Structure formats: C-alpha cells, structure tokens
Image (cartoon, rainbow, N blue to C red; front, side):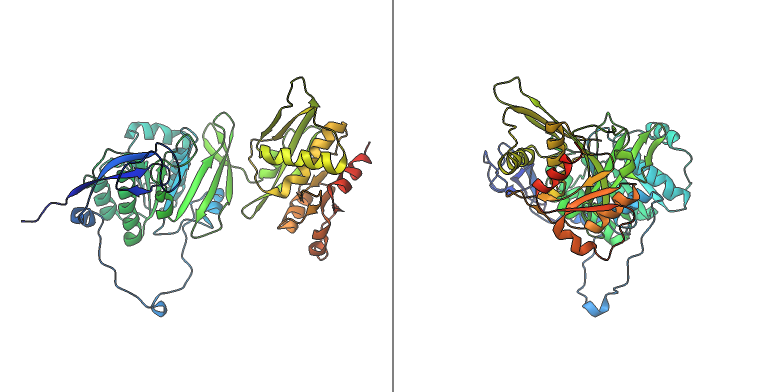
Length: 462
C-alpha cells in the first residue's frame, strides 16, 4: 500500500517568497515586517501532480546536439504587444502579466486572442473569475472572433491541464493565477503554496507541450504581483500594465524578458471598443503643450530601445509656509531637491524661500538621470520667468559640481527630436564626438559643459 505524503508546516514571506521552518516577525531575507504566513506543504513527491502535467524525466544532451536556430515567433497582430515581447510570442514560453484591478489586463489579452483566432492560431482562454456570458459580453465590444478560440471557465488546475493536453493550443491564457486550485497542494486559492505550485505545473505544460502560456497576476497595494516573489523568477517574461485608471493611456512595460530587451514599453489608449495602439508616443505625450510659457522644457527619455519626448513642467513661487514645499509628480523628489541645491550653490540662485513643484506631463514616471538638465532648466525658467522656447529639447545628467555629463544613446534622442520638428537640442559637450558623423537634419546642436552654460543660454532669450 502506497504511503501518503506527509504534511509539514512552513512559513512563507508574502513579499519575497522566503521559506522558513519557524515564524518570525521580520522576514530574514528581505527584512519586511509581519509578512510571514503559515502554510502546509507536502514533504513527499506528488505523483498525481506530475501525471497531470505530463511530467517525464529529462535526459542530458550535449551542446552540439541542440539546434541553435532562431526561435520561430507567433505574431499577436498587435505591434505594440509584439514590441514588448521582443518581436512576437515565443512558443513554449510562460509570461506573467500584472497590473492594478480594472487597468485592462484581461481586455488586452482578449484582444490578443481575437487577433490570433482571426489568423487561425489555436487559442485557449481559461477564466476563473468570469462566467462565459460575461466574457461574451466583453468580447462583443471588441469585434468578431475566429473559430479557433476556445473558452474554458474553470478553477481546477487538473481539469485545465487535461484540456490543454487534449486541445494542444498554440497559445493559452490563464486569468488569473490566483484563482487556480491544485488539489494536491494544501491551502486555499491565492495562497502562496497554491500560486507557486500552480505556476510550476503551467511551466511544465508550456515547456513540454510547446504552448505559449500567459498568466494574469493580481498586484498588491505596493504594485507588485501578489504571491511569492519567486513567481517572477519562474516565468520567462514579466509584463506590467501601468497607467492611471482615470486617464486614457496605458503603458505595457517589460521588466523581465528572456527572449528580448527589458524595459521595453508599448503604449495603448483605452477607447470604447477596447485598447488601441499609440504608434507615436512622443506626439501623444506632447499634445496640448502650452506655447511661450515659462517653466516648461522638453526632454527625451529612453524606454528600452524607444526614445520618448516628454514635457517637464516646473512651478517655483514664494512660499507662504514656514518650511518651503518641494513636490514632484513623475520624477524623484530627492533628485529635484539635489538639482535645486546645485543651482543654489553653483549659480547663486536663492530658492531657499520658494515652493517648488515639478511635474512630468502625461503621467509618465521617469527615473533615468538623462532628464536632469531639463528639470534644472524648467526650474530656472519658472524662477526667472523666462520661457525656454517651444522648439528646444534638453538632455544631460547634472553632477554635484554643476557639470553636464554624458548620456547613452544620444544619437537616437537627437534623431527623435529632429523627427518631431524640434529646432534646437541642448546636450552634453562630451557627446559631440559621437555625433560628428551623424546627420542631425535641420536641428541645431547646443553643446554645454555645465549647468551654468545652459542657464546663460537661457538668459539670452530674456
């Protein structure tokens, strides 16, 4: 008589997935407080689970026996989606899609399923949160679907695994991983052990069956995918769907990709009939920009391989409080305070008694230091009430000595500004060597070595 697998109690950290044999108030790995939760796991092998996933022992292979040809990708029919994936859907891959509730994750994946089904690609859409009539209602707003799309409303992972093996689809969508229940694992759906083991089963199905599997993951209030952090390490690709629920645009960002570049983004706009692609995000982000206004400067940031022009706005005014307020939206507040300290020390601008507000128009959030020069110029422009000009783009990192340092991919940034019709580009002087063989078109290059040089050029407009 076969012995049953013994159960043991372990504690998982809900932030990083660290496993411990005993409870503690603070996670020994990530240091988070009150995140250790109790779960029962099996200490033996789950033969039933392995049979459900079609598990077979792998044999070792020599490197010369493995084909090194390029993986054939499947086009999703949505160019922005393919861009983030690195050129299309890779068969046998496992992709995690996360985002806030109501941001449009299910709508985006259903649109991908629609395009694939119209091209005759076999697709299985598994929903554990909605009924067939609810999905049919949402699909009716998107348009007609092909006959190759099959819908399954099920939360039992064993049943889902059996359908996937019988149907053998090219693409499968699991919406969502927190609703899947594996009967061989202790815990309720959404628990750390359930999420981890269910993902492991889907990973084996993808690798052995060749289906590209997309799993939807709920996020916590901190913006991270709920469940163990190791979930992101298990999958091949991690995509985050970002944006304000009250704004029309959405950004699909790749934070991990084993088949392409990371930090690539795709921009979409939420409309009545679903999500539409934004082919030119720079033009979209600069819409409605005021003319001849002080405190506004255009800069360029790199998102993956894509240059994006965006507007940096600043408002500097005398404070009516005991301590001046410094607030930044879309930029790091600490970086703004640092740049204001550089301006006071190196240029003698006394802004200690002023409130300062910095905003990145369009709701984008930027972290790279290449926009330092634009932030500094927008602050000076508002403080001195001098318009920087509507047709100038500024890019460069500002150091503590007031120097303007080099930035990467300056060629793409200048080319994007020229394509958008900008007439002047202020950039670090050390970058001119890289641009000597580049045709900048009709755009005028303004090299600066320090933030003082940039402000002196701005004062000439007075």
